[in-house]
Image (tube, rainbow, N blue to C red; front, side):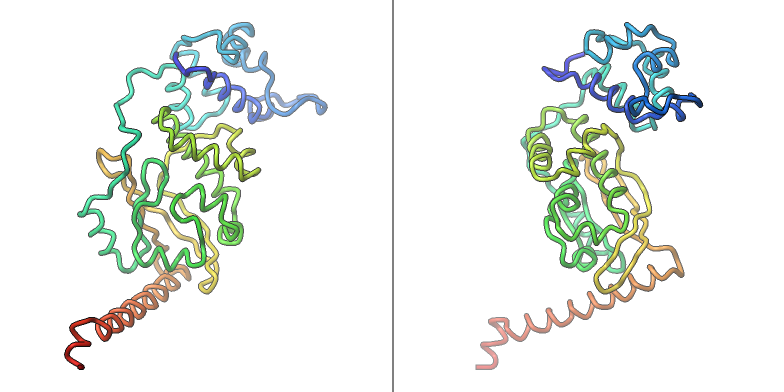
Length: 295
């Protein structure tokens, strides 16, 4: 296992062990004075390995755990599929597909056309580094007043309005942070991602706390609550499609049929359409060709 000078496997196991309560692991009568989480010896016993072996895993001195051991640890630590995959990737990195980490991500013209066709739903393209690469007018209207909308993590941690925009801010922040953890694991040599982690660590105490949990998640379909300054509370489903061969995600935000959120999105679409018509009319009046005719 080659993680440079970092013991990433050990850090992950320790963080998830400390986040797993004795009750979750099946210990019904744990002493009340104990520290949070499971002890190393308890994890070892439940996983069917010796305490000394598990301690070596956390310390980075055991570098080749078997798939059976990893499966047992995933079960004991109650890891979900994304986190289990991350655990295996840390233990046995294998040969990763080569990614040009210095390349600037580009959105294909066909994908840009698809975004523009989504006139009734907010839509965007999110890159493999969680940058927001392209948006349609509905997204701009939905995130009205927000700053740092170039990147999902910067928006939720560094935008002063994020706490009001997301009614359950911690849930949204933990999900995005877990997605960042997955992105770093996929391209561990990407200096941009390491710079992003450093920036967030420097400027956000909340990020430092959540990042230390070592939670892992890939972006998938989910329902999310939002609080728009004029539309009020919305519940929107994030429908996510992977863009083949790019690591990018096409995301459309839709509401439950017949819901208040659907009616609010229709109102928003009407506002965006009227603004577009007005802007087009203004540009036509002020165009050089129009000025020449008038003169």
